[in-house]
Image (cartoon, rainbow, N blue to C red; front, side, top):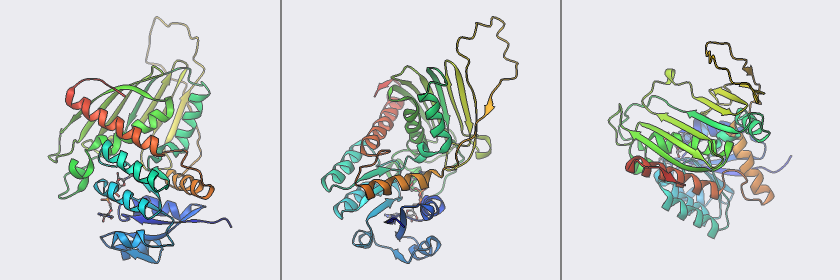
Length: 347
Ligand SMILES: NC(=O)c1ccc[n+]([C@@H]2O[C@H](COP(=O)([O-])OP(=O)(O)OC[C@H]3O[C@@H](n4cnc5c(N)ncnc54)[C@H](O)[C@@H]3O)[C@@H](O)[C@H]2O)c1
């Protein structure tokens, strides 16, 4: 059996316990060797099926068995933990957003470069089986020229006293940095670089300091337009996490592929190039969309396997490496700037 990279999980009680540690347990080339969490590390280690539970950061950095760390702590700790992990010679897979802002992200990337460790960021939605297929459809020209994309990720996130996400000083912002950043990443994966953007943020319903509403309007270098809508004040049952990708010759729609799941559903319509103008413009017709099957890829497992593969083969991350991490922070900052200035920002 091939070697498995031993990973230490820094901040293991949230998404790590719910999604990534179970995904890691199934990965073919890495494993959880220890967990660190200031709140109940022993309980988390037991659930993760690993013997080592640390409550102090330094114990993880000083553990010689640990070759790489997965950082899933609150965002305010990411920079100092990336710097410490890099200084200890550990490769790093850090959850998104990389840091609170672009200036911190530059410092994080510089620390990894200085200590010659790999840095990968957790924008894992690109690994989803449906999104891989959409990328292929676009690259093969099955939809014609991309014209418009719409991506939605919303939930109901009521005030919870003391929670880091609801305060920009510890989360970097609200719905925009936390959720819309995933979709900025996904849409650039589909159709290439964004050229300019403008954003609205708002405090529509909840009374915490972070924004609970964000809408971004985008123009890509390829010419396509897009909107991204991410709200923390839309009930979960009402938000269907829709993705719509339109081109000059067809379209692909998904529901439930954006988010933390492996599943969802997808349908597409192709081959509409050269259609004659229909002056009647009757929209009350049955569309000929066909269901599209896609491989059920756990995106968290896939991102870990790509990370470990890079370490095993000595190659820096091909997906979600430092350049992409800096790009995402640049786009996030541009969106917040635009929300303040009410102007388009070139990126
Ligand atoms: N990619 C995804 O799908 C996804 C989903 C959710 C969260 N995230 C990201 O994961 C990170 C964590 O989010 P979460 O929802 O799990 O948060 P959370 O608050 O639910 O969990 C964070 C964990 O970190 C621990 N912690 C607190 N302070 C710490 C410190 N100084 N050092 C180490 N651990 C500490 C907490 O005890 C807790 O167990 C964030 O960057 C978030 O954006 C990513």
